Length: 529
Image (cartoon, rainbow, N blue to C red):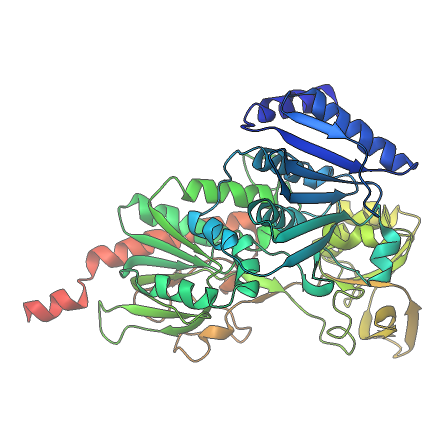
């Protein structure tokens, strides 16, 4: 299971174990069980503090628990092999069980340890899902820190019948005490906010007590992170309030057009940005969703941003870099069957449709790339493009057209997604030239039709927005409101690219610097008068 390089790497990590740990497996006679036995045997051979036994009696076979030898009440269970994107999660589970301290905010750890009540989590993941590790690792940590919390982490490809029985058609999918809890990526703080009553109020009180910033960046994607780095380097007190640091990078897999970096992946780049931000005295406030902007009433005054949890932040200048999100089709059936066959992340959810018929809506680069990747997994792909021709790069079109299990429909308008028994069973596509409608039978629809700016919260603020809801800025990133700047995918600047967002972020940061050195604070102006 582990090649020589992986063994060497894992052996290095296991040197950080402080206490003995136990791996207890429940196995059957199938190939996956034999692979699980091989994996655990290899891990146990790498360090004297790791013991492996194969006498578990859990109904899920193969599965295994990881626990500290001295504390059998705290454990986490993996059902299936945690390889691929989840190998890091396995390594962390081993280290945390063995007493290696997690790099997690101390307040969050205390919150986990203080939770009252019994919480039995079950979470389904796929080995190609880049949004799943955050959930796996958060639940693992909770289970290893609080004996009243259990976490069973299930690889969907191994437990396909269970996936189908529970109508899981998108991952990560989390159940709590046998009931659906949440579909999608969640970080530790988000999970705690859902199960710990009063958590929001505590967080709001802590945020509202902060002193005003000189620069407050709203948004933590490439534009927001770059802005903050630039202003912090200029010596200004800088904060980032982000609903999810990294933004859409977490939903992006291969990145091959970032100059100087031939290849990286979105989650990896998000981690790199967070580490870079951490090099400076930047106050990073994650899971902070802005809901209202109150601009300063006077020149040099403080702008106020109100958050969804009731907190309020103030700053002499603002950089708005809230990014964008996937655009919805807006047709009957889309909302009803979301996560029940309607999906937006081919890398996360593609493996759940192995051997099935699916459609991809959208003929740009994102849509064609999704169709190419999915065609390697599913039985058949129908790609539907509204325009009369595909808009993706020529090299991608050539690759797509070479695949035998792909049908391309151009000039087609998706008018409805249909379903039965709570699952997608087809969609209706109208030929825009003839008006004829065609029903396509399938089990999944992946929507890839562009982006919508995250600016609804700004509509009554007095900030100028384009007819598409984008923030209007000038050549220096300034908005129509003094001291407020815009950057990235939420602005009207064309070409929504990572490298463009980074450039815009640096421009907005420099413009904020220029504004601050040329504008006296309102209180100083009042005193001078």
